[in-house]
Image (tube, rainbow, N blue to C red; front, side):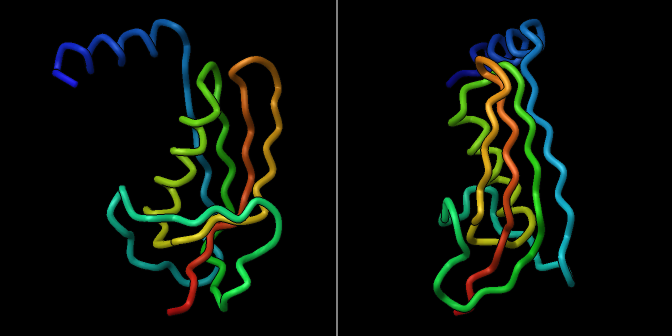
Length: 110
């Protein structure tokens, strides 16, 4: 994507009122952040079966965006928190393009 396309996309998002906000609440001691594109495993209901350490709880509020972009923000925040797993994901749809996601971020023991 060229710079012009990025600027147009950003301006369109602002003009349309699109927003994604995340609140991360650490659990225990903080871990070093991972690269923004780190691999993250999603576990929709319960925690990973492998030994793991809970890192944080998270709430992501998305307005006027596609659900996939909202989940991508969830993954980005997991990487920033040093996590490599997201579990117990609860998604509430509050209208077209409006999503509230809550989950737990974890680091799977190696």
